[in-house]
Image 1 (cartoon, rainbow, N blue to C red):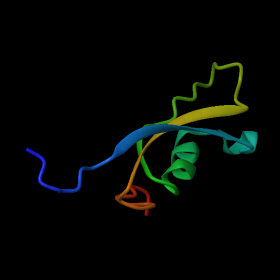
Image 2: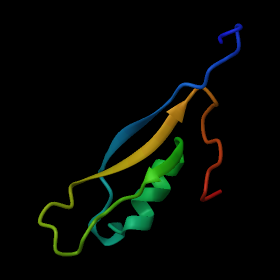
Image 3: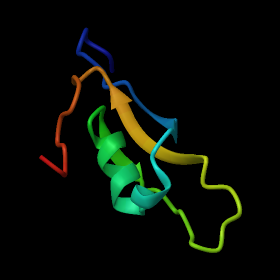
Image 4: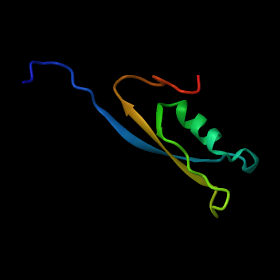
Length: 74
């Protein structure tokens, strides 16, 4: 039963990261960039055989807890 308690509001958002130089195009680089915003829950899945390295998607968990909470790279 609800008695005025605060309910958590978290969701997964997808970041499209582009502009990383080709010589730095590695999964850990994209994950590091995304981790500067929130917690990474779906890491980059860049494959060397992919044809398109211009945009990489990373899933992050966002909510009311604040920016950078539980950052895995700091």
